[in-house]
Each structure stands twice: as C-alpha cells, then as structure tokens.
Image 1 (spheres, helix red, strand yellow):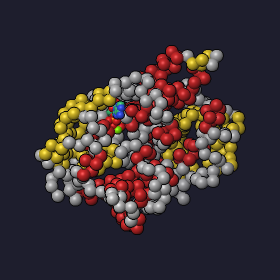
Image 2 (tube, protein in one colour):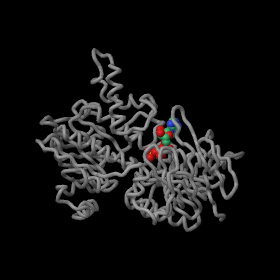
Image 3 (cartoon, rainbow, N blue to C red):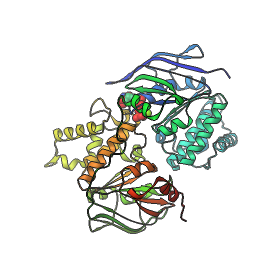
Image 4 (cartoon, rainbow, N blue to C red):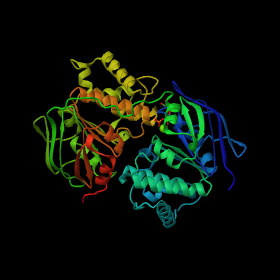
Amino acid sequence: MKAFKVEMQDISIEFPGVKALKGANFITKGGVVHALIGANGAGKSTLMKILSGAYSHWTGNIIIDGNHVNIRSAKEAKDLGIQIVYQEVDVALIPYLTVAENILVDEMVNGMDGRQFINWKSINKKAQEVLGYLNVDIPIKKKAAELTLAEKQMVLIARAIAQKCSLLILDEPTAPLSKSETDELFRVVEELKEKGVGIIFISHRLPEIFTICDNITIMRDGKFITKMRIKDTDEKEVVEHMLGRSLDESYPKYEVEIGEIALQVKNLKDNKMLKGINLDVRKGEIVGIAGLVGAGKTELCKALFGAEPITSGEIILNGKNLSLKDPNHAVEEGIALVPEERRKEGILVEESVMTNLTLGSLESFSKNSFIQFKKEYDRSWEIIKDLGIKTPNESQKVTYLSGGNQQKVAVGKWLIADADVYIFDEPTKGVDVGAKTDIFHLIGNLVSKGKSVIYATCETQEILGISDKIYVMYDGQIVKELITKDTLEDEILFHSAGGNL
Ligand SMILES: Nc1ncnc2c1ncn2[C@@H]1O[C@H](COP(=O)(O)OP(=O)(O)OP(=O)(O)O)[C@@H](O)[C@H]1O
Ligand SMILES: [Mg+2]
C-alpha cells in the first residue's frame, strides 16, 4: 500500500449566513490515528465531510500522495478509499433495509449496474464476516429501524470497513457505545492502523484521544490552530487550544438546601426492562442514575416522562399520584425530559432554533391566545447566550447546526419550560468540554430554584461531580443507593457491573 498522505490546504466553505471553514489546513497519513479536536461548531465535521465528498462548493486544495484531487462527490471520495462514519447515526442508515443490506449498500447499488439480480447469499455472508471481525453480535436480517443507537453505530462502522478503505474517518463514533463496545472499536482501529490504514478520530472525550491517537490537530472557529504529537501534550493544553482559554472548574457544584420529597417512584415496572424501580428525588436535589449502556437508564427516564408504557407501580409528584398517558401529560404535570436520542425525540430538525426552544412552553409566551413574539424572542436569545449555542440567528433551522449545538437546543428547550422535575438522559453526549460546564451551571441554577433533577449517564465522573445522591442501575433494577460525597468511582463501577449480585 502507498503511503497515503492526505493534505488539505486553505479549505473554506460557506453556508447561508455561516462561514464554516476559513482557510483550514489538515495533514495526516496512513498508519496513523489522528485526532481532530475542537469546540462544538469549530468545523470538524464540515472539514471531514468535504474530504469524504459530501459538498461540492468548497475552495482550497486536497492533495493525496502528491497529486491534486478534486473531491466533489461521495463516489469520488470512496473511489480514493476514503470512508466516513457520520456523526448523525440516526439518519445515516436506511431504516427499512436489513443490517446486511445496510452494511453492503454500496456494493448492492454498484452491483446492480446492468444486472437485475443481487446475490443475497454473498451479501449476507460478507456482512456476517465484517460483523464477526468487529466482534459484534447483531442479527444481519434485523431491520435497521429496530436497532439500538449503539447497534446502528456498529453497523455504520461495519459499512465503512467493508469497502475499499485507505482512510477511515470516525466522527464521534464512541458517543453511543458502551465501554466494551468502545474497546472493541479501538482494537479494530489498532488493527487497521497496523495494516497501514489512516484513521481520523473525532471525539469530545479527551481520555479516549489520549488512549488511541498518535497525533492531534486542534481547530477553532473554522481554522487550524495547531498540530501536535499526542505524547508531547496533555488534556489541559488541548482544552486551552480548543477553547482559547483555560477551564478552571469542570464540575461546578452549587450549595443548595435540599427540601422535601418532590418525586417518588414505587415499584415501577414495564414489560421489557424495568423490574420494580423505587426511588425518590427531593426539591433542590440532583439525583444521579448511574449504570452501563443497556442497564435500563433510558427506559426509566422515558417511563417517568410517559414516553414508555408501564405495567405497574406508582409515580407520585408533590403528593399527587400520576398515571401518565403520554409526554404531553407529563409536561403538564411538571416533568421534563432531555432524551438521549435527541434528533429523533427531542428536537424538530426542520424547525428553527427559536421554535425548538419555545415550543414546549408556548403557553407562557401567549396572551389571549396570541404569541408575544418579543418575549419569545428575548427568552430564546437568553438561552442561546447562556448555553453558547452557535447559530447565525434565532431563525436558523436546527438541522444546520453542528451536532453539539443541536444537543444544546434540546437542553435549552426544557430550561425555558417551567417544570418541577427535570430529567436529563446523557445530556453531555457530543457536547464539548466548555459547553458541558455551561450545562452543569444551568443544572445548578435549576436546583437553586428548588427544582429537582434526575441525571442519567454512564459518565461516572459527571455523576460524582454534580450529584447529591446516586442510584446505580443494573439489568433493569436499582442495585445500590449511594451518597455522592461518601462515594468513590470504583464503587459505582463495581455496582454498575452487577458487583453485588
Ligand atoms: N449545511 C449547513 N448549513 C449551514 N450551516 C452549517 C451547515 N453545516 C455546518 N454548518 C455550520 O458550520 C459550523 C461548523 O459546523 P460543524 O458541524 O463542522 O462543527 P463541529 O466542529 O463538527 O461541531 P460538533 O462538535 O458540535 O459536532 C457550525 O456553525 C454549523 O452551524
Ligand atoms: Mg461534528
């Protein structure tokens, strides 16, 4: 295999009202794992989309092994061996096709040229081989629509490596993955690297970058900032380059007086995952729900929001027994959820930033059934500023925001709505380190006002940093209750792995 040296020089691209890249540079080569880092909206995905042929209207030069290449379509990039796993996992698969068909979709389409039939046997066999190589166990005949987010991500990775691959771009591949799935992915990355494949790795989880990357390029505001060898730098320096400032306090903890019980859950069951959940959340309290991917955290959050049917048990809010019919009902009763699959459940990507932010609370902007535009506008801008949502204006469609900025909109929506209990399901997934701290401040502000917060995540550090009390889930049950200030990370990990069963 040739060296496969890729150079992007002076790359610029503009979208209506947004200069996404302003003369960015990037260099990498085969046999190297190269991290691409930057705050939400810095231009990482856009730069990689250009390299993989998603846009045709960029300017600048792309040089591969000394030759200028003119990549203006996905096919041109693929023919050069450039494969990408997009950040938008939920929309990158064709929902009604099977896992095998999704993995080999390009082969199927190309194989159809001039022929009328597809060799299903070979498609299924090849798909099985790639999944076997990735060491994941997903039935190849399952429809993509039925997969979990983590499974979808693995199918996308399988699709990328099933094709001619000299350069593999992974745009936040680990965000939905469990620890063991991430480890498997890293093993595959190492193996591909050994074979001389170049890998570009985008992630907001700095420890991952220091685990598997050799080099790092940092971007800020559409431009190249610096390139370093990983072994010559550390997390603090990387954060300073990416934010243009240092980050003093990662986990701000507000001093809040904890009041009486607001939400009480008794023996909650559904017919899939939840096996009798008991918990309580007080006013002013941040309750962490810890547990691995698949432990039932998301199911619990959804059940408390009326988004999943329950078969038995009680949800009592401020002394009132609720039988939640649906999420609208939950909102009326004072419960808000920032869901994990935000693009699917939390936001309307074809609507504007302002519409998304205010839709959940239009009543508070109406007077005699007229919307008070000024009030809606002002409140939207408060949230855009508080969360640092990067958007040219309030009427930008959410689909045009970067991944992390879409997440911020989903969080912001509920900060506008006035609820008693705020449930966050993995709210910092895909959010840069600076914005994470902004979210923690907002959560701190909520509890200071006497609100209650349920914070579900697999990021144990975050739970330890901001919660008062922790419930650890394993296999649809709460296996341990811990007081945060007396808890060490190892204890959470021990119980998350079903340690005491
Ligand atoms: N199709 C588009 N139309 C309009 N603006 C866009 C489009 N694609 C990207 N942008 C804007 O370009 C900027 C860079 O976005 P990009 O998605 O590259 O950021 P990113 O570094 O990948 O961020 P994140 O970490 O949040 O994924 C953002 O301000 C984004 O809103
Ligand atoms: Mg991105």
